[in-house]
Length: 277
Length: 172
Image (cartoon, rainbow over all chains, first blue to last red; front, side, top):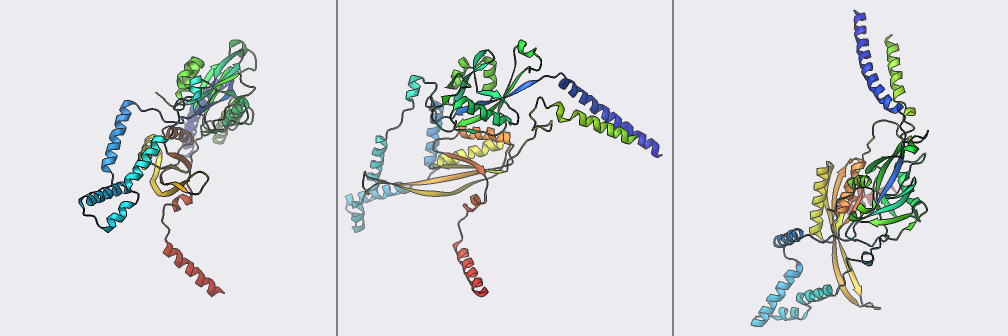
């Protein structure tokens, strides 16, 4: 009775192994087509907004309503209590009900004086301009432009025979992780250290492109490149100096990307950029 | 025969999953086909500001988006505020011109085991939506951040010190 049982077990084993072998063979067939893709890392370096945006009309209305509600629900502050006491003391002095403590208190700096002095100080405070020199000159290499919006670093690199405006990218070398490759690309693109903070080891976006036919046909060459984007924030506002790997660079706002980046590339890139409506 | 079939099956499996087939395409640190997700430990999102109405609204916003993203929010708490006095002096003298009393308020949102890729997205979102005057810090949780929340029990400390002195005197 043991023999039939082992036969059944074997048959079950072969049937499952067949299924797995089938799945494996389908996996193997795509690999043996020997499609070789180059792995590239690109850096999405952004300067975050420095000042807050101007409020839309509806936002202003909501803000004023929220402030009114906050005022109604809040308790009186020390300053407001002092103001009330001073006013009541003034009333008593007028009507002649004042006593000695009232006369002593009245000579000290009253809360009203303090409030007037504070209001005067605020009116004299010089607020900085929202529109800077760089905005007026439209200097695209400056980090001082468009303070209330994001600025994205875009470089002109030579890919093959033509120069294109893209995010700085470079091929991953042996023994590097993708993020290390991205950091190296940034360091090589500019003279001197770029003060930046990378957001994690996981890429934020992806773009794939095929090389032209005459390069693909050659033996041992890759079909194309797969670009993985890594997000970073720039932490200092010192201006950058162009390195030898790139031809030119610019800090662009979202609206300006249309005229610089290639169409399909821009679609992939805008997928991972934060919306600015 | 059973053993033969099993060994054949195992060999077939190891051949297909061996790294030599995928070496030319993936970096060598990819030793498994399936993506490996790394999870962070307990993180504190610390928000500090001088304006507590804005701070409170923003901390509730951070709590809400963390929950909506699907992150495990362990705790949301307020740390006791710090009183800061700023004194300005008149030029080239030590006569006080102005005295400002400021209070720095703090709110913390504690999250646990967030996938590293999702953390970068969450950091980006919080950073972009920071209102004016709020300072952000995201760090791993340490014991000191718990200690700050509690008012030290001075009586207990004094009694403990007395006990230590008595025991050390006895030992001598």
